[in-house]
Image: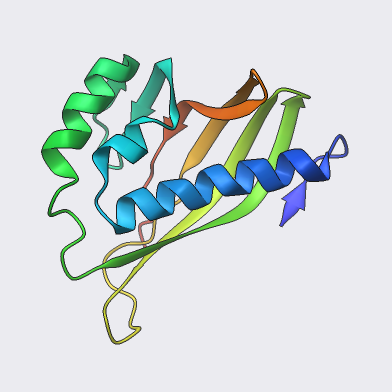
Amino acid sequence: MRTSPETNAADVEAIGKVVADVEHAQRNELPEAFIGLFRADAVWTTAQGVRLNGIDEIAAFTRKVLPGAMKGMIPTYEVEQVLFIRSDVAAVKVRQRYWDDGGEQVGREGSPLYVMAKEGGAWRLVACQNTQVVEG
């Protein structure tokens, strides 16, 4: 994993925990756990380009699509890079892959970018773009 020069090991670990919580919520189709990772005024853009503004839109969308979305797929999320914009703001590049029960990769890989902010000692998702990787 690449990090910026201002790297704080404890913050990188905490950011990695948020990404692991995203994976857990997605893998287990837990809308409330996923929604709870966002700041109230967050912006989320899905891999299909749907822009969701604020926690109410993120919550409504997530509650509609997450149950059943992972049928036949096991998602994994790997932090590839953490760039600290400030000590309390980080851009986090993630590698997102989906696997079947036999360990074969299925579907398109994702390349999300999460902008996260540390508030009250906790890292939160603030502005996120979930992008599908297109071959070629």
